[in-house]
Length: 279
Image: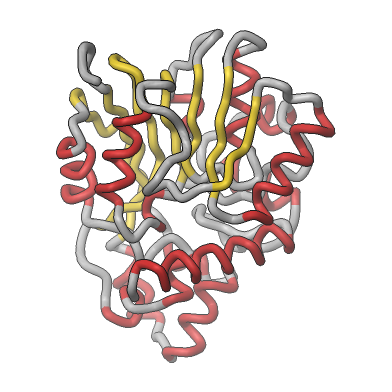
């Protein structure tokens, strides 16, 4: 797919998710089922019940593949940038940690997601959070303006991931930190998934090989690039996700083919830093 087609496809897919209130980029036996299922998914990928109870209702759509906020070592007064903030789940968690003197900026290209996030912020009085419309390949923030960049199962959706890492580096202050959870590949996907529009929305088709993903972070200028955790992504358990089910039905995919894909995909948590003295 061409870049603009990818963006259009992803934007439309996540607009539907915002309107329906649930979907999935996470390992779960079913990825559509409302608030309770979203909480179950989030517990499975590393969120505590205390964290789930601390955010506005409706902000957790069960879309992540990890908990970057828990690994980002946020401090009071930090300015945090969330790439692909969706309905605001991780932004609200970050806002609770950085306090009134801190600031959280969520960027998302889907107006329907921004509407949900902004309404939650207004309703629950989150004055230290703002949500901006924009693409993560062209982040609407100033150079050297944030302390931490986080992202949760979103960069894999970008058609130009190296550009995303370059933009994250630009936005960070010298000494700033990157903490992302994402989907990467251990081996190339078979064509029936790699070329699938539905699979792209489901966070799989757009994923890079692990070494290429980490190489993109390093090429942007980041240092101390560390893989904090890797978890097998049980693709075969996603058969109830509408995006994956559409691929299976359309292509007539066999259980053996699904198993082949399952061994290709992992969730990865990566930490990196912008060197001090780097503008």
